[in-house]
Amino acid sequence: MELEDFADPWEHIRMLQDADRNEAIVAALEAHVAGARVLEIGAGTGLFACVAARLGASHVVAVEASSFAEVARALVRDSGLAGRVEVVCAHLDELEPREVDVAFGELLNADPFAEGIVQTYASARRWLAPGGVLLPSRLRVSVALVEDSAPAEVRRAHEQLRSLGERFGLRTAPLMERLTPTEPYRYLAPSVRPVGQAPLVDVDLAQGTPILPERWEVRVRVLERARVGGAAILFEAPMGPTSIRSGGHFGVLVQGFARAYDLAPGSALDLQVVRDDEDRLVVTPCV
Ligand SMILES: C[S@@+](CC[C@H](N)C(=O)[O-])C[C@H]1O[C@@H](n2cnc3c(N)ncnc32)[C@H](O)[C@@H]1O
Image 1 (cartoon, rainbow, N blue to C red):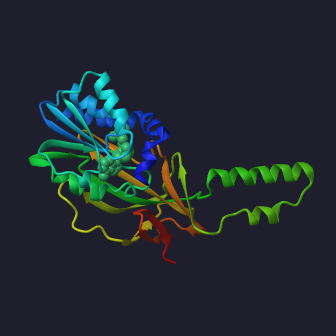
Image 2: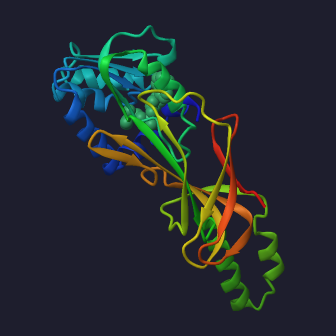
Image 3: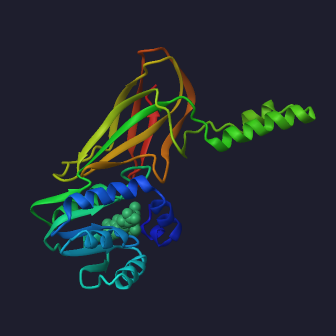
């Protein structure tokens, strides 16, 4: 994702309407920031930098690379927090570290590495005083098999073709076939029902992970009979007392396969997961 996307108010509207995410951040701040020097990594609107100050942080540096830094500055000023919250408009990697006790941020979207969390948190670790806290501390990513991989739009278009075809006596089957994607495709589902799941990688953001692989092979077993049509990327990022999880404001990333696989209970599908040059995870069956 381009950082300048975050100059778009809709990105922030989508994040802020996600009450579970917001409460996870607030709970983490309640647990860690009283009396602390704090860094917010990617402050966006500046809301949580201000919450950290209200929860007793002694000083907050709110770093935001996009032009939304201006919005954050206005919130800080209007809330009477100018002496305690400092908004810096820059990419974190470009800044000289200053010592803080807590660094927190939320650089996750449906594709968990696509916002550069691993690289940016490596920069954030350089700001931490000995014993300092980085939030979230880990990023656990897994792959889940799902039965229905057709995006809602494809399914709805097919339903319409079927019903209009019946109503007006049209032969829509060839059209339906033509309008069925055969290339692997990606879409965001509001939620998914996994029929099998396997861990992919557990990144220790606080300690640093040596080198993130560019490619994994994972075997995912199903517990029930299933016609598997795609794979979903799931993640969990522990944030103090709670976690930020996939499926919030962005939905869950699902990648449809070019064909469906009929799997008996207990059988498995081998998947290849590749991190592409934009750090997106691309899942394909190994068969
Ligand atoms: C997912 S949004 C979170 C915004 C805000 N912290 C919140 O929780 O509502 C991530 C924000 O981090 C900013 N960002 C991402 N990587 C950054 C980096 N390396 N340095 C500074 N800002 C960054 C983006 O521009 C964006 O506004």
